[in-house]
Image (tube, rainbow, N blue to C red; front, side):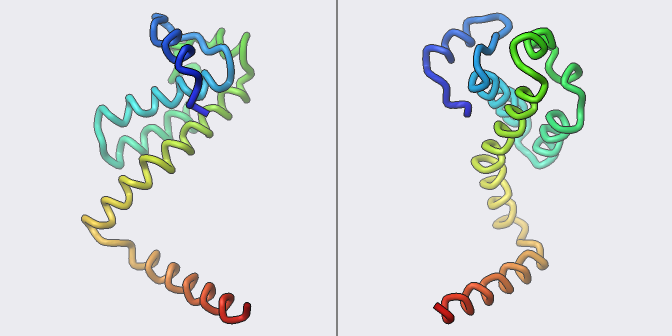
Length: 131
């Protein structure tokens, strides 16, 4: 959950190398990194690279600024990976979805999605009739 207390946000912002104290702080810092990456170039390629950065690259390669000793001493690697997954999930639901919707409007939907969504709508209508 990146929505940590404002005092903690201020504390971490003042630190040259922010040191997370809780898993919420960790999620907040991952969230900031994801958003900073996306702001640099708002396009699908950036979303793709953010995903690769967090899920396909060893931690030591993409987060030297937090130092692996912070992850190793304060948090487990599982804590860090959970923060990455949860932060990316929030980014995906809030930002990626809006970006994808904009691209659908601009370029049109994928035909197969339209077909699948129509089939789901049919099933949904049948369920409502049975109720």
